[in-house]
Length: 171
Image (tube, rainbow, N blue to C red; front, side):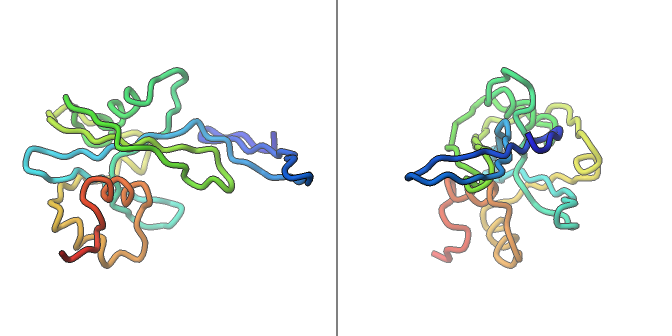
């Protein structure tokens, strides 16, 4: 163990691969979920929040770390949707899962689509979520919002691609 934090730990591992021994520092992460909420009008719910890492506001779909031991991923997704956007959903579909950056972290992100939404009580956690704003965008608005962005959150891009195809396709 090299480092412990509330989000992840870092382990220094000695690896044996193909007759070679080497060391790697690995960020051990409990995993995360993301939610692509789609309302009855076909709009996607986003949270625009400050990200200290880049010192800017980013437009993202709701997401969160699986930080409660033994909580099922879908339960984490339900909790995060209510916490970040203030909505509950009757219909949930797993869109897939991906490795965030397998060269240095064990984090796996599970993405859910949430439909048949109903208003609940939003409960933002932390300074970033507390100053965040909620935005509902139609597919055309999403394309325009991300077309000129210098970079796009990968989780958001993957989720949108699963439902709408490429964000930048004019056809």
